[in-house]
Image (tube, rainbow, N blue to C red):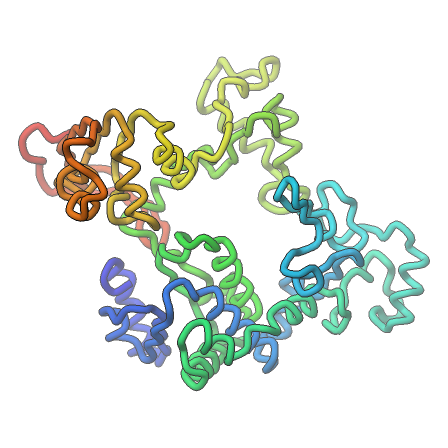
Length: 450
């Protein structure tokens, strides 16, 4: 953060100097951020998920969680269905795994009493057998006098074995300080010091923030890492409160902005999901039914998508033609970053326009990506300098090692000059997701695009 987000990092330093905040840096490398931190914790590359799991275990085992917040502002008291099974019960799998299709059916993950369709987004619903549920919950002491079966799906004592809190506690029981030491290479004493310091930033008058670099999302288990961080923050009451939260430090200015304007293959502007072929794309009604939530912000999903379609197609978008919904392209497969690089490596991609990124060194498997470039017929690179993808054919590690031969590479490479951010006026999204306009500092040289 000190290196790539210095403007944001100044507030971290100010919090430490003025408010006595503790700055903890967990990173395999010693960087400028480490030098400015109170605690630097080097860990093995790729072991982040275990470190976070250890912190969650420490919070639960030592009752460091912010109980009032957890009970009233999370789903911790909510009961899961009786047929839910965790990984400890099914040799590493959750219930609902289909070994042939290699996908999960999440039906067993629903809350008790929820209907099987649409319940993932809804609140507590009436139990199918109200009287039986009432008697059963009263017998177990989960609900008190005057409560009904509609509210009996939550145990505010957090003691029921099927409430989310207890399931979470059981799941993370394995993430002991000893496991953290073995997997992450962090001594138990150092880990406990970090855990105690971070857990102290919790309560009615305290919060702690997690700032993570883009590397977390580049792991094969990136989704689980971010969710683990979210679980930790919710247990400590650090979500939705000043000074808390989770801040993703994108690579540089306006990387978040590029996502906001829908440069990813599976989202439309406004973070509306792209329709997927044979899933939710037959009609606008089917698309809305599949994606609309029962409650919360996304309960207005139909309004968002219709407003978007009207913005795209103007007066041509009418109720009679589904507001031109059929004009939208459909997602037909995995067109994510690794999806198309793997197809490129298999020779299934003929050409590539490369703008605003450097997979020659920035990819999670840069060697695979450099070798995949050799399978292209043509490559267009638009950048301010000759970045590695533009020179891979004569100056890559693979060429120097003899894995690739310049003479054998048939890829035609075109390098186009580009203007820098300071050479053009426009908007960008900064680290805190604020949209800002800036004037250009000067004109780009030569015939660089204006």
